[in-house]
Length: 250
Image 1 (cartoon, rainbow, N blue to C red):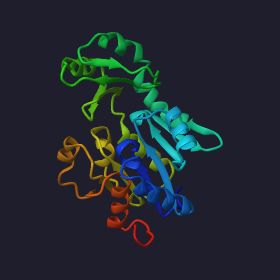
Image 2: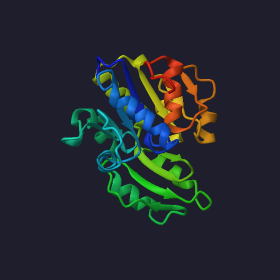
Image 3: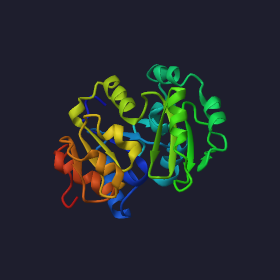
Image 4: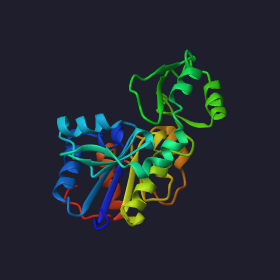
């Protein structure tokens, strides 16, 4: 990865998986045609099982690495071995979590507007949120317990280890892989991408980004605010930052 000319670190839903079918085909084809010079990291709220199924069943390019579970998983990825967490990069995450899942679920059990997601994540607890019924005292509870909380797209409420999110975990991986930071493009569209997009690496908020994210990113010099949606917004940013040659018409 350290020798690749360009590394795309991208959110999935709404970003890498967003835009038209034609735009996705262009971006995915560009990546597959340039594997020697392009690296791919998924930075997503999705879990390893979803990532593996996505690539096996939907024709999405396999990433080289993944920062999953809203930054609480850092993993190598291969079509042969699947998604394999890197233990020493996750040690600090596990220590910050301190097996807090059951305690958090107990404290938030029956809380207005929160429905526990069924997946048993390793270092996070996640809920679907009905924002019209949600009581913000949940945020105070999580703060008091020593964890972080995140509401994204007005649909999801994640509880995370203190100080852990997409941005810090991506930067830990980039440093571990000895990738020059100015050759990485971060791409996202919702508030759970905020820490990644504002962490100082070149970044793009694709054109379909949620308004709350756009408001938080206003004025950042290292960020391109794309007009195009999803995959086309990523291609727009690759051109804007001159990170890699693109085929004619892309």
